[in-house]
Length: 271
Image (tube, rainbow, N blue to C red):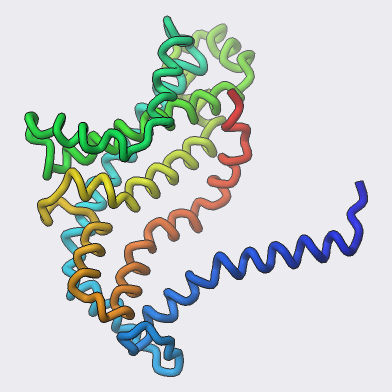
């Protein structure tokens, strides 16, 4: 099918407007973050880069950063390991009762967090898991394992079964087949899942707000919420703090964007 010049022009114009609409708020926040005006007015003629240092020191974000690193790093590692193993079991090995068990796993994706967070809080209370790293990490792992199992099961099923059968004929056991055959092939899908899990955990606010009230264990998102309550009139410092908190996610995406796009397009939604 040949696309006319008018259609190409319309497509480019539409995509340009869409890009401007998406990037405009980002550019505006960056401009406000380096502006000396506390009211949020742009003043690009007198850039104040010290806003980032002032926001970080006044907000006491160092402890919040440590908590975010502990929570996010541990949750992503455990979630990735469980996702790979469960996806391999459902997608390659075939588990007993898969037709019953896998829909139950998928039910975790369909259940909204708002419906379970209050019962989860009261379930954690008798075991003293509130206001602890263990509790919030366990909650993130539990919420992410359903998507991880679904994602990796679909990714492993895109690998031709003949490859795994050839490895078995050569004497490879199921663990060797997983680590040396399936994982290298499914690497883009694994990287995509890791990035998504990191983004969801790092940006979490609601779950941490319910389960963690101790400032010593609160992540950066709650620290930013507390900071905004104290410095509501200092819009430039708020913008600077928001930019600093978002940098790890943006940096990881820029660094691994090729792997991310490959994972999204490598057939990971194949059932």
